[in-house]
Amino acid sequence: MIVTITLTPALDKTVTLPGFAVDKVNRVQSMRLDAGGKGINVSKVLKALGTDSVACGILGGGTGRFIQNSLTEAGIACDFAQVPQDTRTNLKVIDPVNHTNTDINEAGAPVSEETLEEVFARAAAHLHKDDIVVLAGKAPQGTADTIFADWTKRFRELGVKVYMDADAALLIAGAAAKPALIKPNDEELSRLMGRKFAGIDEMAAAARELVAGGIETVVVSLGGDGALFVRKDQTLRGKGLKVPVLSTVGAGDSMMATLCHGVETGMSFIDTCRLAMAVSAATVMCSGTQAASMDTVRELLPKVEIETL
Image 1 (cartoon, rainbow, N blue to C red):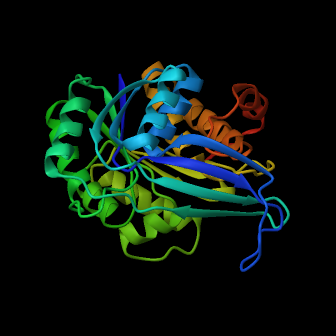
Image 2: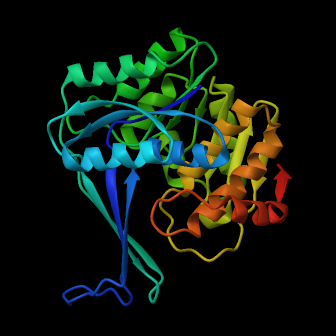
């Protein structure tokens, strides 16, 4: 079983605005609404890959109902704690003329310790030894930066593998708790290690340091340059695919979903990494935060290049 936890989900409103300009009247060419948030995005991609998950987290108000209904209609199991406040709405502005993607994200409301404990209990009720829980995204306002670290220790006591995708203080504290997998991008890795990197070889060496320190797998997203996949016996680099980009939102979440899918289905590490590169590339070809087309994934898969470092 795979459980995803999104403490700060969002209703993602994606608008296409050709020639987006500040201090001008901008006219929307098209718009779409999606259930969003990093863990929710992971659940959506897992569903597209044919692997079930349970989406957990915190929802509230009309936007929360929209998100839950959207996931239910897509066949994704949900077990969210409910709060009175409306779940936030995030605006994604895509400008196909200037080739820009602009995110305008709401902060979201604070939540109580009781609500956070309810989320943990709901997630834990679905998990058994060797299952995977994905801790992804940000924590609500006012929540301790150690929450992912604390939950990592508690889930590990249950025999559950924690896959973490966080940034800043959440990642620094969380990584110290030794989750099974972390997925920073290059900038997040630099902040985590407290130093800048001159190139991919130095980033790979830093990832190996983290693996030697007790994290089983470190995946470093490199944007258009691909990704690094590091574990004790292997350091792989997936080269970035050249594809038309409609939206970069959710590419990292697609990679996380594929890593979970690979473990759940018993794929080899290198085949999982190859599929992760194809799914991530297919995702950026989609508008909004919709899951990638599996037809596109199958077309891209033979083009993926993986090298051993």
